[in-house]
Image 1: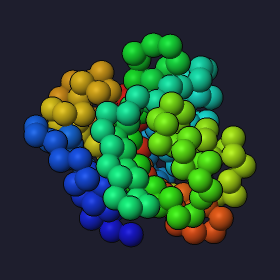
Image 2 (image 1 turned 60 degrees about the vertical axis):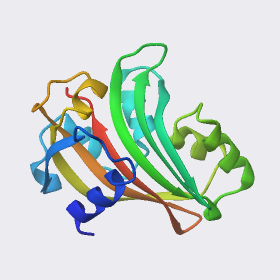
Image 3 (image 1 turned 135 degrees about the vertical axis):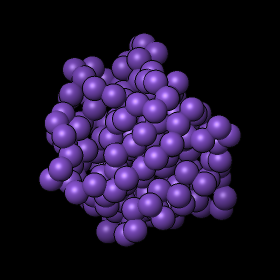
Length: 177
């Protein structure tokens, strides 16, 4: 995977003016500073990781979405449950042909974080970490993660394999810690 090409592919689905990201740098996993390393360098669902780290369930807020045939994309923020406190920004591109109609319906209902839907439906899944990114917030990302424009945080690109098929492409950016 070329991390910056994949990042462009995901963010291009939801063009922002002003820009979402001022600068993105692909960094080695080993050089990711804590606590971001613990949050991002693993092959687990970010929903569960964020809930454990923040000590609370998370809610999903869908900011935008696209559906083209069996490919559903959405731009989201995960929030501490019952609050407006962001813990993560994300862009998801889901190929629905690899999951059941029930999973598709629940994801499109936009009420439950993606990881929780897959866990609840016992979808056989594997998460492949693609790249760690050092992200400098642009004017569109900063307010979504309650940070200042130009402030740095970290994110990751990953792919979720459902039933051994590459079903989901992800951009996941942690709120600053």
